[in-house]
Image (cartoon, rainbow, N blue to C red; front, side):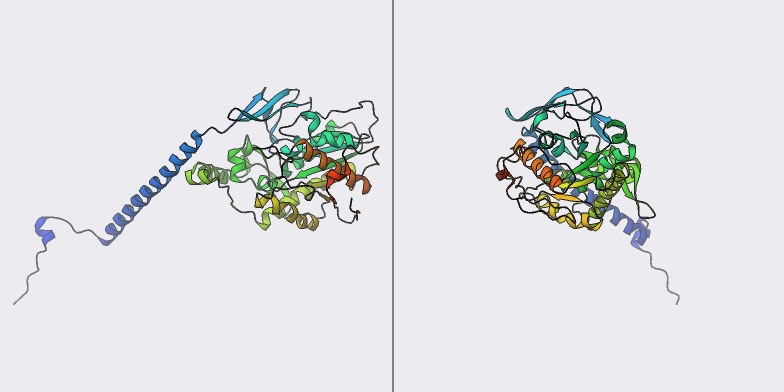
Length: 396
């Protein structure tokens, strides 16, 4: 007797069976929908938290007139020939209220007590807002106090807010110093803080959160292992720039203030040291050997990266023979009197101490001629011993 095929329920009802592939596809799509829903809830929660926190009155700034502009080579630069008020308020309480005078060449003015003094040479100060003097008057900046310590030299302030080592290298490659300086002899100081490593690598905070940060000079290693410029962060690595832009809009990262990459690597520090090495070598080609060095600024023990990276960066400088002045023991930037409250930038007192430390070192090391007199009491230096490789200095 021949068996007859059993009619299935699905056939009787006219419903086709789902293939295993279609079933897996539907399950995958359902999983994606559930994940998307959870992510939306997650992001929505942090969005609400960000809205609530942003509802609290944060810092308010006044720039009158505007003193910053886009620069095709540097990303951002001072507007030449302006005198601007820059003020910061927390609520109705002033944090700082200062005026910046920018000369015709785009440098912050360094007041000179005796303009008739014959200059032995130029002393160039470069770096970020610490060297520029954010929050203080023209005569209260690090370069201004340094000019008082070495009156036989003309001091120029080439620093600006947000700058990193790549900016001074870009200036040297562009020949800016050679075009603008009248002096034949020049000495370059680069004022370093640990955050500059993130500026060299172009972290998400820098390239997406700062004014024209995506236009900052982008340096990396070429195929031969040499430091080379690849345009700006926006033009030299557009895919990573787009990815960082997405990360900066992510509500969870925004709430916690997460920067990407979250940690600095050995490679990041080596690249920063190599960028500084390239700048020192190119400057030496124009103004002779031993004509540039890095100044390590004191950190703030309240922030691990600030307190650790300054001194821990010394081996990277020594590995590529970059001269440096170690001022990290001059004071703790977190102590009262050394940084502007509710801001973090150095006070005039801090600038005075670092200026004297620099001048003392350069004169004892023979880089500059002896100065006439000290403008800061020796007790304020707190026994700091600035150091440069191959030079032994006694304790002050």
